[in-house]
Length: 399
Length: 138
View 1 (cartoon, each protein chain N blue to C red):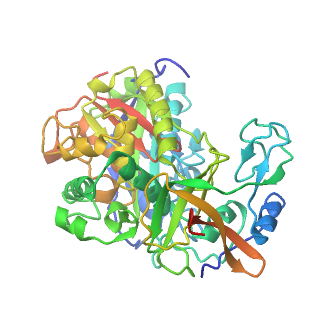
View 2: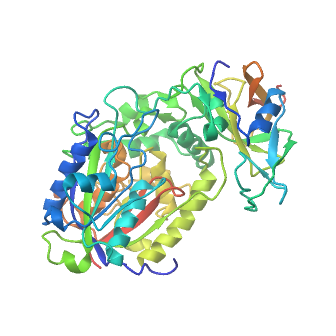
């Protein structure tokens, strides 16, 4: 696609629900998802039988050596439709990484094309009831893993640590700057009633005292694995007029895909920067809006360095400058004119929800439903995952 | 090296692991465009040929440190912690970047661009994985 998104501002989010975020599940993930879906449908002023479209990504509800089971530890769109007692016209799953932005894209396109009138988008994350989320008991490595696991390179944490080391060395970023990111996320997350970290703010001293586990990353730079579900209801801008909530319109989106052949999970700063610039150019063109008109930014933060990567990719600071911008208060939610990049707590302040906190905060702020956090905003952007296996979308309340 | 996750060679990777067992680093060169790629794939990621018929050629393994991390806690079991992994851009093939243990130790001071040379970690009899050592110290 080139040029402005044809369905720009023609599809709207009209309702939502966010489950309680818990460390260990006390019920199957499918049960949490059904309950959250019913709440979202009611929130949108709809009846379950009006939902005729389902979109989601079932990939990586969890990680490590766990088997995913539909309805127990993952929830596919078809499973959810069936268990809500709905025979949908359209149930579609996004495959691959970029799960939230990818499935949001499917939901938007389904409404825009008329494949469905009311689409339920969900994301359901799982943390096993016992054991360690990421641990993998492998003793031999076949397939792609043979290229990295034998030397001990495995998992997302070493992958982002490599990128972050290069960032710090190249641009002079300090741990004090990252303390600012993490405390901002946790302290905003601490105010959210559904957050795992509700009522548990941290200080800069807490962060700086935390031992590094995979240099230069410490535990507080990582989101904590949780069980939690977010659901959004989308429909056309036309139908949204008859529904109770203030609609939040989708202006445009852009997704990114790997361009370089690398070892598995070998992320590099160069690749992130290159992909970020390309994705960003497509995003602003699709959304038909300039970066200067955006007044809320919610960058992905499952690992804290992604905040730097995305603020730079989206052009809110020059390359290598995000850490300085942040030290100067550029993301502080306490400042009315900042871009408030972690006002919704992010993943670090909510738990590992794969982009849901970012999308949710954009929706709540733009629909005027953010309560005490409410800011005066008209256009927002959020991002998910990394620029070459994730995406970003622009939303507005003033089409 | 106490890590005991052994690679399982397959049709595509067998020449690589064979060479490693002799402490040689061989990389896949596409027989169509002659460019090197790592790891090998079902197609050539450079010219996109579906018949890359990779030819395995020995490379020097000299390179520059592009990044690094010290693993102090691992999701894998059996590794002696901590250990340092380097992300190395090969001098002869700058498009190829390898990740391996730096055998000088976890507290080795590093800066971007430091020169390293190839060595190997023996995982088991006849099984070795590429590793690196600071240049001039091997």
